[in-house]
Image 1: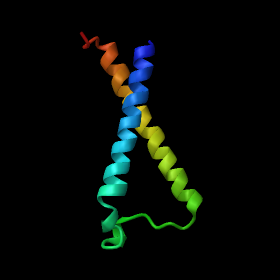
Image 2: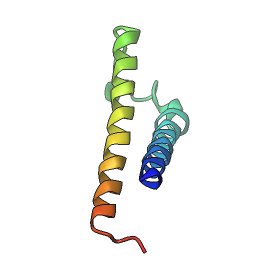
Image 3: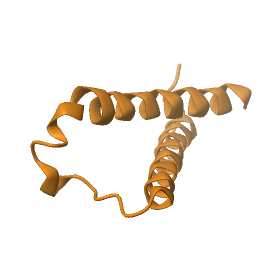
Image 4: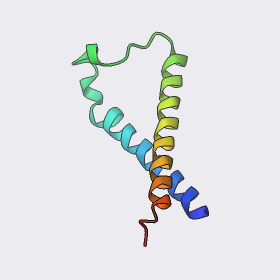
Length: 76
């Protein structure tokens, strides 16, 4: 069971870092070029709340994928 929890934590962290890299680092210079596609910051708390929920969703989907994979006993 601890392997499953570790896999969920590591895959969720990898997904979070990947999202940060592509959204925050790789395309950061595109924010001013195309402002109509980026979220407008009205208040800092709203943006932080959206980021936190997207991280929770990333961990949740990784967890569902890993639990589904282990329930089908596809590992060997």
